[in-house]
Length: 183
Image 1 (tube, one colour):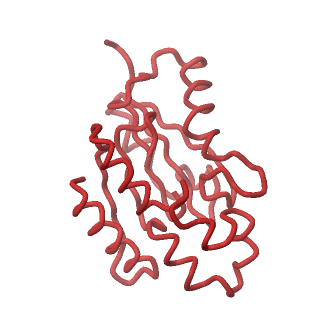
Image 2 (cartoon, helix red, strand yellow; image 1 turned 90 degrees about the vertical axis):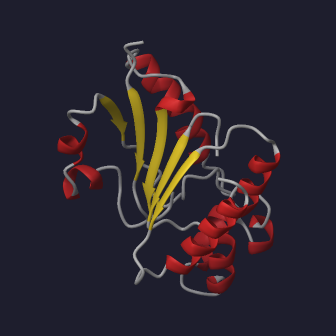
């Protein structure tokens, strides 16, 4: 239909929206594919609607796609043409596929292990307590279960994480969990 597929490329915890342009060849990678790439920032917000009031998930999943499609009418609004991929921090009807690159996929377990660590105030500000997070919209394991139970079309998923990455075990737990659910 002449519409471009769109990739929402999300930065990691220690980066911002410029990292993909500065540290990768993203322009070269996609130049022949005819896709739009949107690289927003949410600072250290983990792309979620935080307990301290910043509505990052609402922005990335609803407001930003609407704004982009208004500015660039050739961007497809079809779910199957819209992909979210992210590094480190990063299910909606907006996205038909998602890719995680060394992502924090089992945040509830990771948060519990580090609740008294250096990042405790940061995580409490974003997610509340570990008990608040469990089963919430920020619990990816619970979200995967709810989405699978709805018997709707499941998004395509891709996950990549190096074996020496501190997030590797959480990635394995998450991947095994979603596979058991039929993703």
